[in-house]
Amino acid sequence: MKKIHLLPMVMAFSASSVAVADDWPVGEIDKASTLQNQSISISVLNNDTGNNLVVSGVDDSSKKWGQVTLDADKKTLNYTPYKDFTGTDSFWYELKDDQGRINAAKVIVDVASSTPSGPWPLANTDEVDAEYDSAITIPVLANDVGVKLKLVEVDEWSVNKGKAWISANNQITYQQYGENRGDQQDEFWYTLEDQWGRRNAAKVIVSIKGDPTTSPWPVAVPDVATADNGLRANISVLENDEGAGLEIEEVDETTKQGGEARIFGDKIRYTPPADFSGRDSFWYQFADEQGRTNSAKVTLNVTKNTQKSVVEFCGNTYETDGTKANTRLSDLSPMAPVSYPSTAIRSTGVDGDLGVVNGRRYYVEGDVGSEQVVWMDVDGVLTRVSSIRSDQPTAALAMYKGVFYFTQGGRYLLSHDGERLVEHVDLLQDFVWGIRSPVEISDTNHFKSTIERVEGQGDALHFSVKSMKHIDDPIPTRGELILTTLWRISSDLDWKPVKFAQTRSFRYISSHIREAKNFYYFNGIDYYHFTYRVSTPNNGARDFQAKLVDNGIELDSALGNVEKFIEDRGRLFVLTKYTRDSVPPYTERPSKLYVVDNVNNKFVDLATCPQ
Image (cartoon, rainbow, N blue to C red):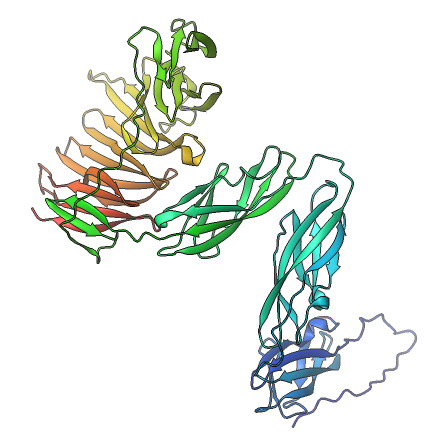
């Protein structure tokens, strides 16, 4: 058996040749523990001192006949106790620095029985004091009970803007961040483990002392939400938090159970994992107007969709759980179609009137080219809403959940809920033909833009901005470029206009027409029917697709001429109809029944109608 021996070394130097050298490497005693018949890897150099240290030698076997080997990294030793041995064992290793100088150190290993003895480890609450400007070290295990306890986990962020981490000697370091905001209380949790891997957890309560010199620090309050039938949940996490000008900064994009969380303005959209029911959670961080941050936990109670949908397609009735394998003919009757309130505004037929919304009559005074003022009339009480001087008329757009939407200047979208005016967006701000200039947009001889409500389904308001550019040609023919941008407003995601689709068409000697229609908003996703037609050289050639779009990004498409969308029991179905091109090669597209996979955002082909 090879043994490591450290021999004294004596060196003599002449006074004229002595140079200052680095300190000799120092090896410190290492202590480790394992269980009966279980190997352990020990990073023995972590507590040693020297430059670029490596392990240059080690006892082949320990004092109690255990086996010791050197890992390929030359920094780690692997120890295996002798069969069925329990007790204290030891061995030596040799270390060397980058100058070839050597030293040695001892490793002591406690080998415990593989059968746990004694009660389960007990974790007790700790209470400590802290200040704003310094970190504290907390020996949390000092009041806990168990055999060879060690820390294995700690909440990185506390409930009140503190941060904690496991530091040396099985202790926790805690730091309070941000400006002094007076006396506060904070807390976090840690997890301990005994030598048999049995775990327990305890809370640390921190009392923070300080003099309030600024406004109170933002307060984070945990949230609880529900995601039913495997559908997404849009959570207004800031509603119960306290502070001025709060904005969400970060969120755990992957939740504890493998779901997804995304920030949308002052909301977080949660998507549950596939076929999951139970409790899920994630954390988010927000900041106030002074940049001070805090974080809170969101707990989700998730239920999966156990109902089966019933859909009529191709003269038959199908029952399905949303998978092709479990889609079959049925004699059940479908439920009544899901319907949503119209977003159209009731007209009064009076010149200047924009419409009536929930008893509020809106009308405009002033002519195009002069100041146009929008007024609200409620039982004879007049309120000035807005005004603009423009050569484009002020126009009503739509109503959605009691809010009146209108446009000014042919490009600005505004809304009024009876009390507050919101200026949403310049709808032509990011307008691009490829190459454009402000003069081109303002040139009414060559450019025209139309904003109008479009019919759509789902809990949303849909509208389009159609921009047309005329092209002069000496033939004489006038060509047209048409850019149509589709927008959607929904209450579940901030009421902010979202640009979800755009089509470009060209009419000249030949026509390339791209159109979007049949809009549906469901489960936080936009759906629509896309068509593409070419007049020449392949007159009559067409392309039909159903599109699935998340916040303006296309995630999937399915071939087919969309006839309608059907929402039933937490699922969205797409029904396409048979089409055949009128020109060679006379492409045929059968009628299809699709369903949307709500987790993976994909169209699933359920059935095909034989022609």
